[in-house]
Length: 129
Image 1 (tube, helix red, strand yellow):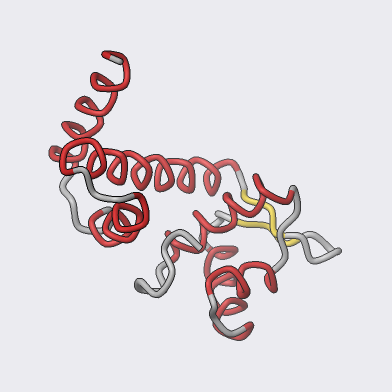
Image 2 (cartoon, rainbow, N blue to C red; image 1 turned 180 degrees about the vertical axis):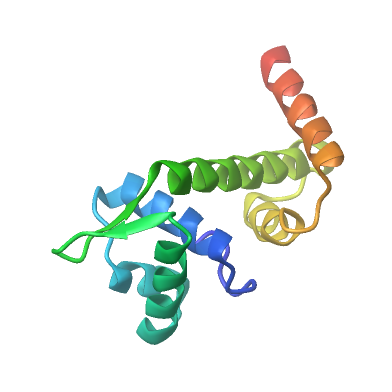
């Protein structure tokens, strides 16, 4: 998983559901548990919190489906993640694995201002190629 073993935040769950959905087209609680290495119980707990928050619906067949707001939130987290990792690779020549691990930690604490500058930097670097 992308952000394994970092705090069990709702953000990591949302992001994982998005990634698994894109990868497999279908997500169940057990897939999330396997991906993150968490117990089924802690995943179930998190899913009911996300359901209450209106980010997630559970279909009768057990499929987890992000609501419109859940999807928006997950995509924003995912973008943040990828941009920070790419920034570390571009500017510091950090290897991909380390950049991904670091971005997991950084994305939870970085300010909006710094993040928007990282975003500008990466966009510029990618267009300049």
